[in-house]
Amino acid sequence: MTADAGSEPGQDIALTARAHVTRRRLLTAGVGFAGLAASTTAVYAGAVEPEGLIVTRYAPAPRTWPAGQKLTITAIADLHAGGPDMQIEHVREVVDRANALHSDLIVLLGDFIAWYKFPFVRVPDPLWAAELKRLSAPLGAWAVLGNHDWWHGLPGVRGALASAGIPILENDAVLLGPPRQKFWLAGLGDQLAYPIGRGRFLGVDDLPWTMTKIKTDDPVLLLAHEPDIFPRVPARVALTLAGHTHGGQVRVPLIWPLFVPSKYGARYAYGHVIEHGRHLIVSGGLGTSTIPARLGVPPEILHITLGA
Image 1: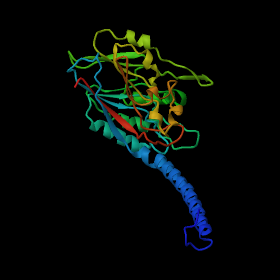
Image 2 (image 1 turned 135 degrees about the horizontal axis):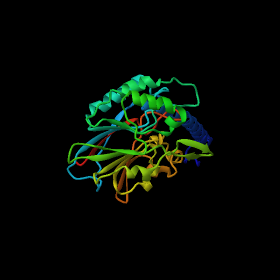
Image 3 (image 1 turned 120 degrees about the horizontal axis):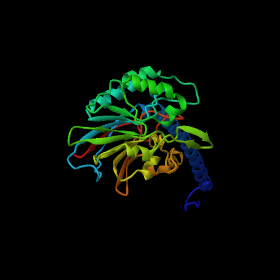
Image 4 (image 1 turned 90 degrees about the vertical axis):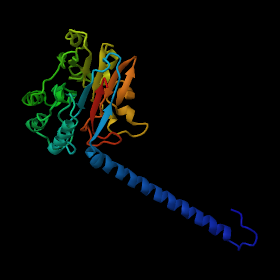
């Protein structure tokens, strides 16, 4: 720094020293702020956002769904009952919010139970099942199973859904709806049912067999836990609904796509996807997996309107 004319000797040194002190203070303050921001973000992700249940609405227009054949669907994915963010009071709120939508059909997209590597409070299967039993829709509530159901408690989940009167569709399809407004609801077996080592899995899904169950020209809805099946779904299917990804769960910029549990990365991570005229909707889900935190993807129930 050069002293102005008329400045006192040493003034430039004093100004430079003050500038250095200011920079140090700013750096120190910046580090402190970054630490505070990280702490605040962690608290928000772990304690606030998982509690913020929302309803996300879609109105897709698949070309294979008849115009004027209106159908409303409530979709619940990845309940993961248990842990710090999905205790029985949270399950109860999910059911209350779902019933308040008054949809024609309710679908449950798998992963009913929670599992973490650390000790956590479990919600016994009969308790969450008793809440799901309250789900009410004219065309009923139907389910598929998820990978966590297969890995961490399959007999209990099957028994719980049976006690709740909720049928499980596994490579099967059922014809629903009133005359002249019928549609097929198909459900796929889980694609990751049996871990066989080093990130490899053997699924129980059989899409070709499932499609053989469809005997009429009525439109088709397909339920799948994992969205990775979508590239193989035939155009015959009007809409595929999936969960599993949690929308990335913790969406840290530039990093989160690497942690989406899909071989396609972020391609099917979340939301409404249209490819070659075929429609997929992936729910961000409700509970959490691996870590009890959400950031940028609040827990959601889907409300979908077709044929409006």
